Image (cartoon, rainbow, N blue to C red):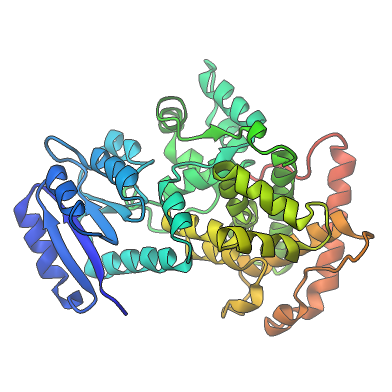
Length: 419
């Protein structure tokens, strides 16, 4: 295994010396270099390629957010981390776009090693260099235009409500992913991972959400004209339905509230990769849709087309970005393996179990009766988990839930926001 090339940037020399001493046991795995300013860091990067850059936030001349913005544009393949001891909320908010993750000082060698190791492993997951470059530059994901307008209107109203904002954001995979990225950063210092978008919104508070949306433009609305024939509404409908089905399955397993919330969020985010590809590479994704015959009942065709054009499927692309953003492992795992559950070594009931089954049942309901239809439910995976006896029961639960939703909201998309 080749060494990882890591660049640490801090204007305090004693901090850099301390980092070098702390990380000396990793010298067989990491080549560590240091820079005392943003300008020095950029000069070093112009001469050598780095796998990861770890920068302090407050530095004279060029702060961490400004440095990582330049790195993102010039060297998008480099993983970008903020390591700061300053409770500078404004600075941290400005770094939401260019930074992949945020770590708080003091940071142990174990935490730093684990964070860098996971980021590098995720980067190595994708074989296509061009795709890695693209994903390293992704700052936000396209949101459903109607929800984007709705959240903007709510935030600009005189009586804006954090509860209403939370309900809107928790219906949208793109906005939810970005909020979860921020709230799970070490900057906020929560002892447990936050996986429920509505709770994340409440924790951040109205003023921070306003800054993210109105000043920093963290959210963006999908430009439908870029990809004729692609329905973001249909994708949104599917993601929300899978989220609700996943939570239903978790409750049937008598899972804890925390695990049920994880299952809901994993279902909401499971097709994040499709948002990334459709929103950032619309021409190429249109080719994938055409080759796979979008209305076909076979998902295998779309995955094969994605693999052929991008060198990765939407599941791998979504897991890569969410992992790079530091979202909890169980959510990333569910996104990565929701079509290929048997490839995951985890055979305990988890968000992956719920999302794989929920996604399959949603697919069955949409395509049942079509020519050449086959269910994507992997019964061997469920058998490996000791849950194959649950398959028909879960299917009936999800069918009943879908019927109830249609009866309640006959003119609206499937599902409703989870709070």
